[in-house]
Image (cartoon, rainbow, N blue to C red):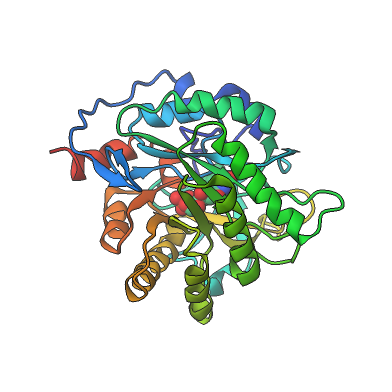
Amino acid sequence: MNQNLNSALYDIGISYDDNWEQGPPLVKQQLNPPKRTAKKRTSFLGFEVNVPFGIPAGPLLNSSFIKTAFEWGFDVNHYKTQRSVVFKCNQFPNVLFVDVKGNLTLKKAAKPLIGKTKTSKSPKEFSITNSFGNPSRGPDVWQKDMKKALTYAKKGQLLIASVVGTIQEGFDENDYYDDFAYTALLAKETGVKIIEVNLSCPNVANEGVICYNKKATYQITRKVKEKIGNTPLLVKLGYYGDDQQELLGTIVKGMSPFVDGIAAINTISAPVVDQKGNQALPGPNRLKSGICGASIKWAGLDMVGRLTRIREKNRLRFAIIGVGGVMTPKDYEAYKKLGADLVQSATGAMWNPTLAYEIWKKHAKN
Ligand SMILES: Cc1cc2nc3c(=O)[nH]c(=O)nc-3n(C[C@H](O)[C@H](O)[C@H](O)COP(=O)(O)O)c2cc1C
């Protein structure tokens, strides 16, 4: 039976702006978070955290969402990616369920997937597409709100800012890279302890996605680090296929003087169509969008394994943040086993707000 399953953290049936204003559905349902007594803590980049688990950049739009995530036991959370300018969200809808049988391999992602507003799968098994375009209400709004979000972190909890550069009129490549650094500095001004740059978005200056471009990744990470000084810097990468492994090694080594941690992965891009074969998400450049959830777990695990090997082989020091298809405590465990220092879940957490509690109960209670 097809169900119109709603997410506890983000209402996929209403616009991004309405979500922003109304806050997470969980709060409206007046459900109480399960109680934890966190005693044991681990260190992540020098910060004590109850459980190295939380929600990556995306589902937590503002301080109201961050507050809810902390209350429900997600200990390391990202505030959704922000910009130095006001930037509109892509047209509604922004989230659809997609039918994927098994793993979304790169071969499968080359062919259209069917996007729907309903699914017959359980929240442990499904995948979605998300397409927002990194909207931002601008620094006047988010800096103030990020400061508020920081006040909701209890002992053993950590907030991370995510930023991205924006191409503006008259900008050349360097101006664009400088804008990443400027936006990171704006985030630092809020007092946030860790900053991530989102390198897994399309590079408007150069075509293609930034994280596959050596020059862009080096320039951006160097410029950001110069601006934010001793604040730890994370980079968010996409998936690198078998034929891109040399590139991954080179990029990781090249960025390593500036970077304290690497988060992987973002989504896997695929064309999404409706039942009739037409583009499912309205508007230009939206035939392809990012797929996340259960079907990309294989790719996140693969990247974390590869990053661990690169780290060991080259005796580098950086934290690894494993993201992609974490729907159950077992998935968390699989990422930790492969060398992840922190694990995060977007899709899984959106439909299961007790995921952090379940992980704490299984792995960190005593
Ligand atoms: C609703 C939603 C919004 C997202 N927005 C962002 C974003 O602003 N910045 C970013 O780096 N990643 C964003 N992502 C990607 C997630 O951080 C994550 O890398 C991806 O969803 C894979 O994890 P998952 O399988 O647990 O969903 C978003 C994901 C979702 C589901």
